[in-house]
Amino acid sequence: MTGDDAQQIISVTRDFGDRYAEITAYQVPTSDRYPEGIKYSMQYGNAAGETIIRYDNFPDHPDTAHHHKHRADGTVVDVDFDGLQPLFERFKSEVIDHGHDW
Image 1: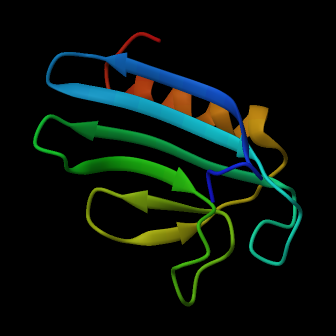
Image 2: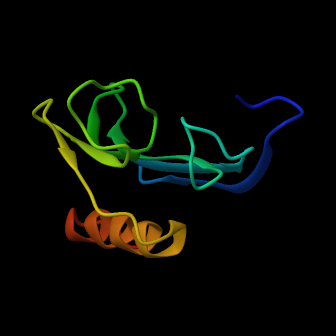
C-alpha cells in the first residue's frame, strides 16, 4: 500500500559503508491491517542484504504481535508501540549500540 492512499512521512537512509539503515513510514488509511494509520519499516542491515535489526508492522507474520522486531538470527519478537517517534529513537539507539553514529 504505497499508492494514492498513502503519504510518505519518513524517508531516511544512512550509509555506514559495510552496513546501512533505512527507515520509511507512510500515513495510510486506518484499517484492520494498520489500526494506527501508520505503515513503517526500520531496517538495519549489511551490504550482503542480511537483516541485523528490522522493526515493522507488516501483518504477514503469524504468531507475532502487529508491531515486531526481526533479529539477525531470524527470530521475530513482539514490541510495544507507543508511537512512531519513540520506536524510531529506540531503533537509532540500537544502531548506535552496533557502533555507528547517527
